[in-house]
Length: 445
Image (cartoon, rainbow, N blue to C red):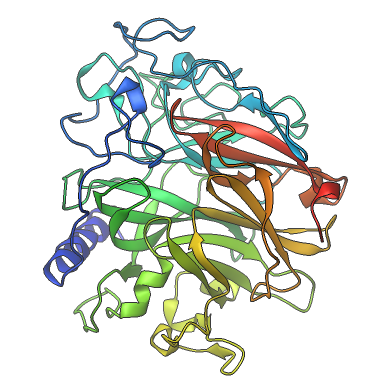
């Protein structure tokens, strides 16, 4: 499927979602990136009058950061030392050891969804990203990618320089602008139509014949609402065969978000109301030789829904007709998203569930889930469908106000070499991503 054809079909999906009643948010959340007025930790932004993507690095005024004017609102890393968790380092921003403003044109971004690319390298996908805050458009990109070969996260994660055409270098850049991370997955960029496309989950899976293909599950955002609320057109999957250099969105994977049942022509999947349960996601490989599935946790758009569960064979990630869905203890796994019951029995974690990440932890000998908005919490379970434990607080509410915890795959607690868990989390007031460390010996399991 050529990218142009795929994007045309995705445009049809955006229009379809609007026509069949997806709706819009009730009020816009102002954006903290680039020092714009903030209305709390919404974690995403309204395009408003920011304009289109700029270019170059430039400079201007209005920043207290170490990289000079134009570098956004980030400040020094806040010191937090809790009962089981502490801050380690900024991952992004002008104050980070990676100096992402000068090296990648990133003054502000969020999420940092992290996964092993299949060969030991960590890839990190970020959401809405800003560069020079003083140029027209503030160098806004819908999403960017950073790469790292760092396996010792005790002092943070190191991102090497980007080299144009080098698929293992620090980011995706052009030869004529090697200090500017390029956008991965495009969007229409139209307010109340398709504001942006934001990665919510990622995984590497083997390709026939050898090697690994990278997959990102992303959401198409129609509009931003009040803090923690947004409306999506659909979720979908993009894939890359060159370690994240280029991405293709597969229209067969779109789950259009609308409260109706509707057959659509061509390559788009039929619309089902249960699509709304999988607008944001987290992937995890099943543990053990007996479990060959990939599990997909899904939540509705925003930060106030419950979590649901799907599974599929690794080779079938792009074939939604082969997915199975958890329908509760009475029904077990069912073969169609339309069979998920509406009585609450299919819920694996009760609301509210925010952006989340899930990994198997050999140290805990359990699945481990992180989520949280303001407070960051951890849950454990023996099986993906649960039952999941009561949450353990890693970062208390009001301590440093974080959201979107994304587990680092090179953590000792994930590799089975120790008790330390490292994860990325985003701070709205600085609009950047930091790394934290948690001692899993202090988490009940």
